[in-house]
View (spheres, rainbow, N blue to C red):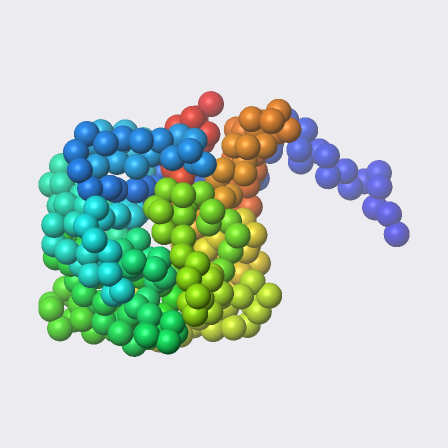
Length: 333
Ligand SMILES: [Zn+2]
């Protein structure tokens, strides 16, 4: 039975003013986190070919970029590191006190103490095979040794001053291992943001270009990360990852990627009382730019529309490369 002509929904959309009364708003910059890349050395600022507008910075060059995001009011940054030292099976440079990430954390906390600094905790940029865990001689992953390595890495970040450590290796027990290492070393205030539901996604290509962290192809070794990252075709198992990380002591949960997994963000949001972060990943960033460059869509509109999808899904924190251009895309117009 039609209610027309009494009910006309267009009335609620007729003017920009009426729409603004009822539309959701893009979250303020305090609810955004900018992920970025730190490399060893000095005076380095190189654009990442597959992520236009995003760069790899040496710690000294990172400061002006951080200042620019602080000026826009962005609440937090997420740091990924690299090493110029020899890589090994366990990724031992990941917990080197003088590593690029550890240096960058100290510098940023000194210059911008109000900015919340999050450090990615993984081994893949430091292992000589590119996996997120050490490998045994038969090529299989050593999950439990990885947890020890990840805990050492998280401790080195906490000691450098990271406000939040964020384990991303998807090893079983990694959150519990890091939480107990933090507690034993009296880092009671350090927050733990688990990459709790991280999918084995094809959207990480540009990131691996940025980090040089693609798994290498060697006989007897897994050729991808499907053995430890969540399967996109098994939502229950993926949801359980987040449930488990909460019981292991995570303070914040995360779904990664975001745009292909809005249903999962919503499910995790309904499952927990903890804050939920959405990681709008490199491939999701670069595909919008590529579309706009081909003239197939307007970048500003694409960014705003896709971001609103993440907001509707219920995420509390948006981790996104767009954060560094918050004013351009979401500033008052
Ligand atoms: Zn990794």
